[in-house]
Image 1 (tube, one colour):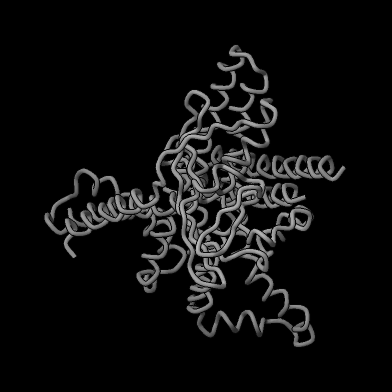
Image 2 (cartoon, chains in turn red, brown):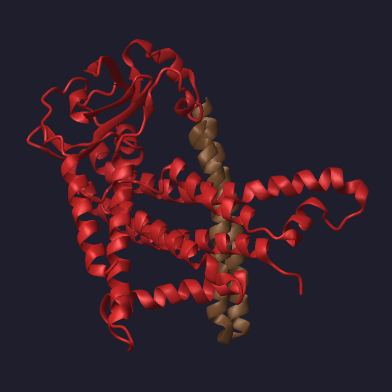
Length: 363
Length: 67
């Protein structure tokens, strides 16, 4: 496909997504509960996922983008815009669609008659997303999904334009392609070739490049505080789990017999196999697990710190704390930008390392 | 009580991470002092090791968040 086609189609796709997810800017009038500032609520609202994209509070009313809710119920596909919940997050507003009723409790959508608040609150933070009997399968476009699609569109545009440059001229690239070339060569020469080797790195370059730039762009999107950019993608355990799973699957499927030999028949006396083989297998799983938690925790911790420092202004309640807070936030944001590129680099480096271990030939 | 213990646990993890990264920094400074030409490679290795240690420390933070 010519890059002009790529550009045009991704632009159309982006516009279609954004228009289809506008349930209309809507205003909410009810403000019940205390007006005291709760920093934990601020942090939870920004760091975890949500079904609508809150943009601004203007004159006491909040405006946002109502993202579509897409549910796979026992009776089929049900879709409606999240504005029908009218900002309710405590299970009181019932939405009826397609003959079934749904409520939303803490950003989880339940069948209306099956919401059991006590059971939900009792379940641990890990167990909660797994309570699937009372909920339809939720395929909604949430804030995280929206940001992820935005990152994908940005990547298509950047790399589409860069690739077009190479097709048109044979000399040294300028402009966007000239900016991307050192980065791509960095991934090839400093990450792929030292770890995977000269002969085999070519097959894995697309994966490593995608991992590097996707994670970096998603990290940066999480740091920009205004719409459409503020979604937190890499701070979502499910996202990092899938990335780590990709790396795991690639490692397992490209392992040659030396790799499996080291794992299943390590070079120790046979009596120790009963100890070594489980350790090796756990090690094989623990490495992608570490990838997952490292990225998630780094990014989430950074976001929580920045939000807490901004929340300082509201906790103290006076405008005089704001220079201090702003300076702190500026410093933390610069640090977070370093963390963004560093975590992308470390993830890609370790992925290349694991793949290199799998395809390594003994000398 | 769980919340307080979790916070203490997270603080201890940061202690360990701080000490670990401090030792890496010390080793890196010594190495650069001995051989300034290699400072680029040493810096890269230092950053990688620091990121890995920070990963482990943040495991503990995640566990503390869950608790």
